[in-house]
Length: 636
Ligand code: PRX
Image (cartoon, rainbow, N blue to C red; front, top):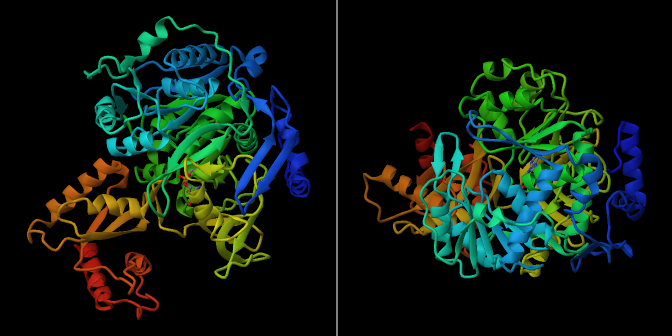
């Protein structure tokens, strides 16, 4: 197990050590794991190139660190507790030994289909145990998994298949989500028309609905698994061999395939899990995210399983059948640590206090939040009504690119402050930059959040496009990793994340690029152009506001056109990217070089009339028109 910090002075001491001697610090943590061959050098790095390598020359397999490493002590300990969407369906428990057998079996299936080390596998599954099994089996044989959230559209799935040149797609006949049954295989079939590299499709039977199985290409999971052997030797991986790709949105262009490697990610996920949540052996830990996002990768699967923990995986939604589903699950399994998003908290808060107040939840020790800033009201509600005033809240700041939690309290150790992610974890060196690119020293400062020293869990590149990795993360502030977030350091040296400062919006904790949504809107035959900005939304944190130029639209059919634009976006990206508000405008504020001034649009939707300098606009009159239209839409 990784070393566990248990006091505030212990944290301060470890932090200090990690800054003065980072290599010795991380080496000590890496020594808790099983390496087939030890590393020759702890760290090689150059943020200008950029290039980062941890545990150079070390050889290992991450699943060996989950299964073989825990076999003796934890074989019969529950590894995964799976709770289905419908509470009347029985839950399932997989002990470490049982999960290991399933992973080995599926690893053998993949091998029998010709999958080799370095091949890419796309996993497009709902939150069912096969999702965990598939990702671990992929890691077992050295294949690279690319998990695509099951809420993404056929087009989005195809784009990801093509970019990764995946050989295998793993999906299900359908999925259950609250009262709905979703035809997942049908969406996968649509994507497969556009995904040339996929050779085989493995289909899990979940809903039992009718699906089309293409002869020679589509295979049933249960049939493949029937005779698969339960022994499969883990592939030897270099510490810097890729473990997975996970696509995420940025300011420009298509989603990027963020690449994480094996050794550094492993120790970072495990170390941060154990310390932030203060996990004690025997605890039941429940993270309510989806494995389709980084939170699920690091804190449903890898972090907890590497630490021999019991992790709860939930298929459904918090409001089904009633808005007390989370609280019911917490009582049913005596959950000790619960981790969710501020959006989930706000939406449950909006359902009324009585739902959480009915449950005592005495087992709870720690509450966590992730994915977006938490407002003080939601923080206090979570603290009082869920934690009953006795559970520390860890507000964890991190990103797909960081691999694990970066700034966060250690539960029960770091004194918390509502809406503050508080202090950096050991090994993390945040630096706040001003508009001129200078670091802001001292406290009571606000600026762009950068990290000035590498950490083991950081992404190593963008799949197939290292140049883009350099441009996006290492160019704005040379020699530093730029997060894209604004931040404040208060008088106590505590960090408060202020939100994205680039053209990324964070809707319900999901990251979406404005350019991506605009491209989807512009595909509509009646749309000439559009501009998308985020606006404050009481539940989702940020909502999506689209300004749309559609000069030839029929005058009395605005609502129909809005719906059809929304449907188009859902089809091209995902229902999560549908604009909440659509305002038709005759033009967009543009500079002489034709660039849309989103800054002005952001001000309008935030209700401010302080637009700054508009003299560089080719069409300054448009601002007034847009402002009036905004007021009318708001009141209407
Ligand atoms: O803006 C920050 C916000 O989510 C972004 C990262 O999104 P993603 O890569 O999808 O990963 C989400 C889960 C780790 C960040 O750039 N964010 C994440 N955590 C917090 C946060 N904003 C404020 N407070 C947080 N605790």
